[in-house]
Image (cartoon, rainbow, N blue to C red; front, side, top):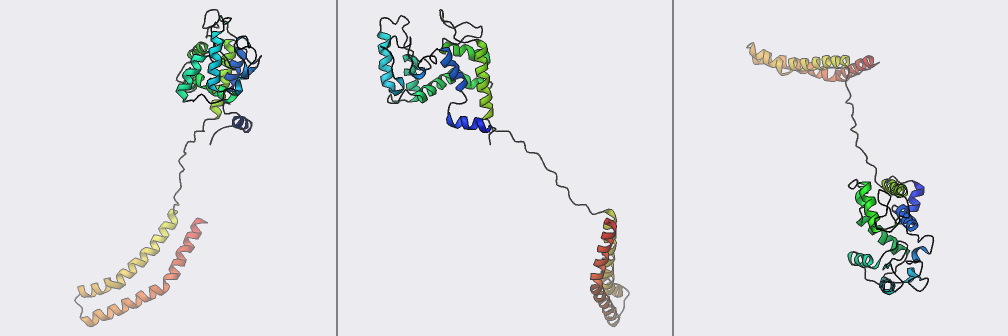
Length: 276
């Protein structure tokens, strides 16, 4: 069972990258692509691709060819092949294709771009940070190395001449939202509480009366049973006397057996009287 609010659960179903979406949106803002064509944006807003390009309909192989063309453009003084919402360069994209086992025939659509950006977030330590195995400042510094528009903890860009597109507080706020969404998806910890089952206790008064009645029963059966015959033998009586005593004892036993129900009823009456 997971602790996810109904509204957030619906959003999570619609968006497989819902947990990391706050950072993805921040990168889209800091890189400046969201004010342009978003997932279809290229470096310089189409300055090195001959205008706007429909990136989301292209395969990864076609994207690689386009990035090679961008690098060959003489006007590209930055020597960068950044494109897409998250401005991924050719070297990085080629490395991820190999690591993820991509064939090159996959579309560079919005879903793929989100997937690749999340992979880069993971490479830079966001999951370690969520698991409390990486300091926040270290994570922010790592992200600044991946995206030049993300500031270092001191507010400056990692690369010389590159200004950060957002503030450190904005980065921390986005990461805090990622952490909150991540926590909502974690299963609740259910602690087992030992339950003590009380054993029924017979009141002392009832137990005393029952023992008295049952003790009397045992005593009588012992005396008038084998005890009577044993006593006669001990006194040296002849067999006729022993037989007579045995007959009397047998009669008493039969009488007690007949009266046993009355004795049990009496015990129950005693129990009821004591328990109120």
